[in-house]
Length: 411
Image (tube, rainbow, N blue to C red; front, side):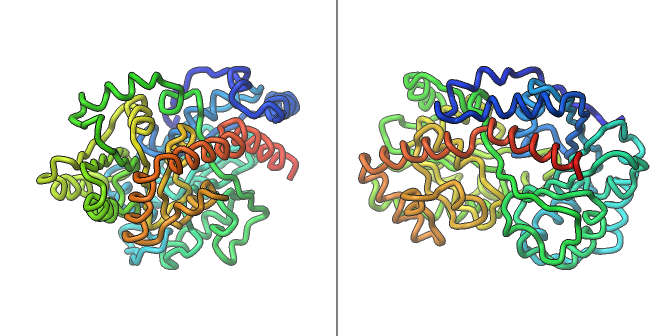
């Protein structure tokens, strides 16, 4: 059996005070859950921590269960060569140049076939997340189960060598879900495709409310001066997050914003061997700068504190499937300077679009503007929270997933 992840329990009723008063989404979730009661669902991915998919599943699975269906979460196992290959897949599917060798293909196929032998096929629907386990459907003996591939990365312009290898496996699924419609690769032959954006859980340790004093008092314990301006980037240690571009923008902005500090907060995932290498490079760059801080694998509450205590959040990605850290920050009314890529513009519509950037120079300019105009920063932060409340809370995602399950069962 594939390892099952324990997620605890959640109650949908606790979310009613957090959604907009005119929104009937909780009632719709309960109605869908009653209609689908008894359906057995399994989500499969490659890691229980360190990435956005795992974070989503920790909230979605218990809420789906509370709605009335039976939902499990299982992870595949793999060795270092496999995860090295699939990390390269991740980069290549976002457009990086890469040549896939016969040995790498063999490592990928072997791992998926071995995991398929341990898969419990006694589910009505199996949702396979991202490229790591994408070939499970091919090697599974399950005939009655509905299979859905859920891709969380930007595959709008994939490396063709890797995509042509994965495409036949993906096309064996009954349906596919991408984060945005523009991420669907051309000429994908599959019965149906949906676009569903992710969301944040306002009750999770990373997003729940915290006393202001707790946030301010925390900074000195981390070596940060609470009386000076602070910019923060929260993301995986990944070259697509452009940590060196963020550092460059911070150093340029510091010429105008005296005493500016920058904290780069990242995570290391078990399925991302590249992360440790990038962390070491970032630490080397930061070594001689007393106002540049690098933290990794902080607790969710510590990240929550940083996002609330900072003056500004930076998410200057070069590629981005969605970038939930944007919604996390906006939920806390903290303004965000974001890269004009992937799912970030989807979260930063309206007046927030003024804070989207395409270069280090633009990033520097927006940082300076927000730190010199605190009233504007507060206004945009408030607008951001309202936008997240309307579109990017976990209740909307649970509703969308229940609609997806209903669609799959009717096909």
